[in-house]
Image (tube, rainbow over all chains, first blue to last red; front, side, top):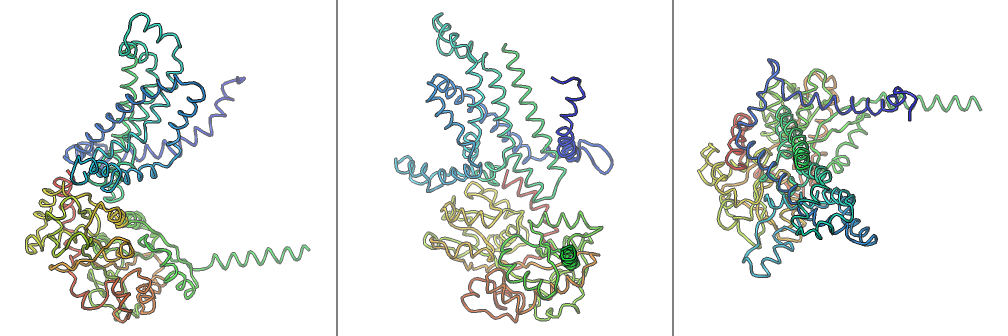
Length: 273
Length: 339
């Protein structure tokens, strides 16, 4: 396309400079805080962070909810995506539009809706009490369950979109062929659909897991201070304690967790093939 | 035509120059009620001083961090913060003692507001009571200890330890549960035992107002300055008068060290403390007055922390005690309450 490499590089230069000066350098400076002390470079920020029981609880809770949200999104996402790709063009467009619609609504609005739904006087508790399943409303808000539901609703569309894209590339005759050859639906999924959609699963899984790790609004509103996650803990460290070292440690942990999840998913996909 | 253009350009340049030449005072304030403050304080002061006020807002931690980060060349000239945050800044050498002779309204302040943290490092401009807001159609509150009682289990919220209301609540619970031992560790342990019965630990009064208006919570400690969020609700909210009394606190004005804009800062402080401005701010139900000459109607007084009797009855937690113990309280809170 270009007469020489210089032309291509020249076009990429503004974006590269922008990213370098306004993103990579500030992030590097911020993250380096976590490795610095008055006497030089150190890992004491990390050892101190993980030595505190509260931080351990928050770390494992974040990991657990990230895995649960990504796993559940994958299960629901595969069913939804399979259904969508087998619809006619008109119905597919409409259903796909409904899947994408929540992404156009602010996460704050979506999360506040859950406060109304999950509250003591919300529809869930009204139904539970109305059906006689409990005499009094059940505490749903400010629990891990509320955060899980909020995060799942927030990121499920990303998984469905990724899997729909992947499934659309499956040759139309391979699933009927597998069925004709005697495979049941579980075997079809494990031996045909999963290997052929692994790229979509890796992308969707990374997006959902990373999103669940780094989401702030949903854990802050639905979990409050009783269900702290790494992101809400990071906010507290900066805005309540003015502790930028701990905040940098948390930021670095989140980055490592996100990259690790991506690498792990890719590794699993590669191993399967 | 050219002459006319030249005259217009010159006039514009002169106007711009005179606008730029105005003195500027940068103040750091709490972010609430800024529209009301603009009307009651900022605009009238700008007219009087022929200067420009630059208003910086944010939470206490952000604002204190900014003062500390710019200590060598202060960008903030004057700030209003809590008395214990003022003491913390004073201990770090970031604020200057006030020259009381430049505050003509100083003598009009309640004695507790005249030198709240010692050495004239600050001057109080507002008091606030802290008690329990509750649904009087559902529950009766007689004591701070009721917050941890069976009747409120699962329907009560407490302030987070890191906010202003947190330590005040610990102090009053200590009075109710231990007779005022002064050692809050057993109170924090008790809250930890009952943590499952507490809906959440709120950080902002707006958050609590939402929870109470949605009937998630029916009782919680609250600063009187946030009472306006509740008094017009269709739900039946009441302000408790517990047998242990109400807690109280004070916000203060401080001067950053070496800001070079001291004269203008003193002018604003003095104006803010004047009977005229303190009355205007009180009548707008923004802040309760620290000026004892302020007279307001009974209706306005009902919504404020107003009058010598009430102010003298408040249980005040010393700023020095808060600073000395805050880290230990937060550590224990994180280990036993938040878990």
